[in-house]
Amino acid sequence: MASDDDDYVYDEASGEWLPAAEARVRAAAANAVEVRDAVGNLLADGDQVTLIKDLDVKGAGQTLRRGTLIKSIRLTGDPQEIDCKFDGIKGLVLRAEFVRKR
Image 1 (cartoon, rainbow, N blue to C red):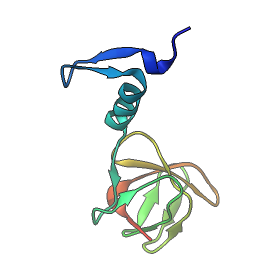
Image 2 (spheres, rainbow, N blue to C red):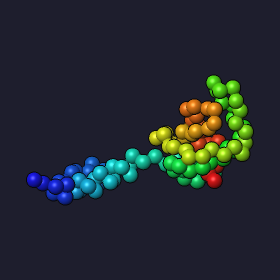
Image 3 (cartoon, one colour):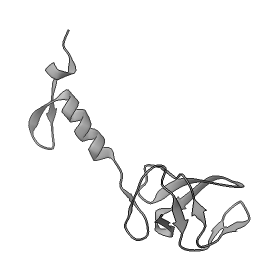
């Protein structure tokens, strides 16, 4: 039985035959989305961010004030949106342009 080390796949971008394991690593890197905060810092899952602007939360009847700390963010796959948890607000999604990494 052949292992992944014996399998090769053709990489359209480079025009080369690559081991299957390396092709998977390159595909994962190509699909990774970089999410950056208002000042250009790279954000990752689990980061803490601070709001840089007062934001009205639609549907919650609440305003999040500038300087509010949001803990443990999650990336959504969209380069401009982050998923957050905040007391009393379910399903909070913020635009990355309104936060700064702590």
